[in-house]
Length: 195
Length: 195
Image (cartoon, rainbow over all chains, first blue to last red; front, side, top):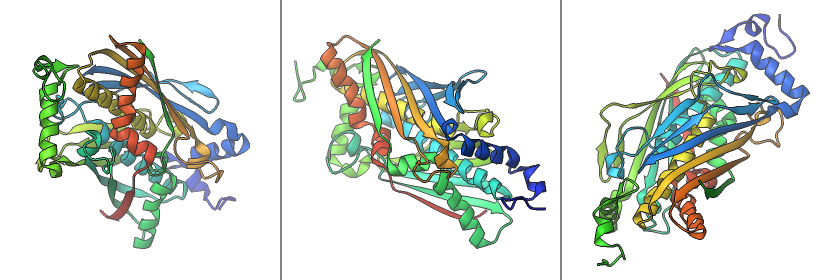
């Protein structure tokens, strides 16, 4: 028996790809009724250690009309490899940016595939981005500081025809907050005061 | 005694903020002589676990004309909190994006302050970004999927006058690859094949 959204009762009561489809649709219904609860604020706090080493913590965030916090903060490290004058104790900031993109594309694809009842067995992705240090070092004004381009290559195992596979993959870029932020740009304000 | 760049011999032979100023200027000189070695390619490989859980590894990268790898790959995790249908085992993708931005702004500021011989004692930053889930869920076509805005607030301890402090902070956004990528946008290609 199908409900109004074309989802069978069986789909609504179980997890698809580890995502509770019932909870997903409950979230959508609640936001439709009260759009203001869709507003989220995510945060990190960063502390410099030395040279290229620093550490962020992610804990509290605002969403669904209230504050949330984790049992304990997640600790995220950063450093640079020796060739970039660091001690290579952690991934560097531009690698973290690729991780943010990879993880967001993957989760966005999986959640929206789940909402459509599409079962996915495996997902892998390889990301590569081009950077020219002449930008960072201001040695050539025609070279930008940031990534010149990023290539994302997915490998997916799912019981769907080839055409459907491409459609499923596109659910990532169509919905991902990090993909949209990175491809379209975000206004960022930077202010400072004395510690 | 000052050299041609106005840097004293004492500055060149020691670390400023943990950064070897001599190595930094050696890098700049080498890139000036052979601009092609400024080209870098950074990479991550991501694997989906279930629902909002996935894991990236960062290891090999290309730079300075050759391939580099780490002793062992750095492992970066991602998940979503329960309110976003995850198991809260790690920071989520949009928090990782904030970490990438915080760490890159900080390192860019510290490296360029070091090049100028400016000693910094402490740096902290708090980042907050606004997201509206109506974008991700395609409930309102006027709401974007990504961050609507990000605020970065630095707190800095350094023996410089107030005016100089603001100048030092601006070295971050002026040089940071992640800041440039995120504020100006990056072309991202997404392709897929069967696993």
